[in-house]
Length: 269
Image (cartoon, rainbow, N blue to C red; front, top):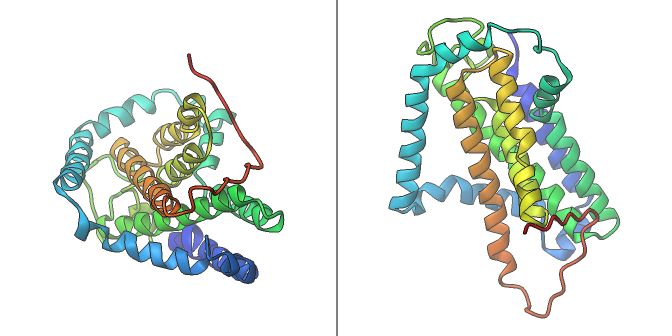
């Protein structure tokens, strides 16, 4: 049995904590994007449902209903995908898988965080922090769901409605929802929120869509797993971005934002 929990979450959480402590002096001096903020905003995310309005609950209900509805088509989609396996290990499909791997988000997050702190580039520091923050939040939520539902993966069972809750160390029962997809959409949402131009914002989601498709095509997840994973990754990413935007609104109106290390502009007519 695979120790999926340690592979996908705790190792990278330790890296995140260790890295933030390396730069603790610099970050705390600025009182921005530090470990304390990471913990505080994590608590805010946990308490978020208490503050939900009717629209938020309707959104949750819609996602749950949509996922359940898609489940009725999971087996048919799987059958169609299995008819052609010629692209199973192609570069495109493998890229999609790799984009959703934990090392992609953690690596990019660490790179931009370290580069931002070392060069005093606030834009990159923010980007790196948000990638890591969203990655960890999404990973924890995903793992809780996997253990709780215990859905059997499609390469084990032909029945899309087979569940074995609380199989904590058995990756075969961690199908719902897709961890690769949730991490990929979390990353793409953060990237989209930090680039300029509508075209680039939309394009940022292309790799995440490819990740979702690859998980279905490689027979690792049902379609409904990917649907819910995409939704969770997006919502967590938006929570991180919106939380920081709200705090930015309290800044001095005369503050001139730093220029990003990497800036994209894609005019749309």
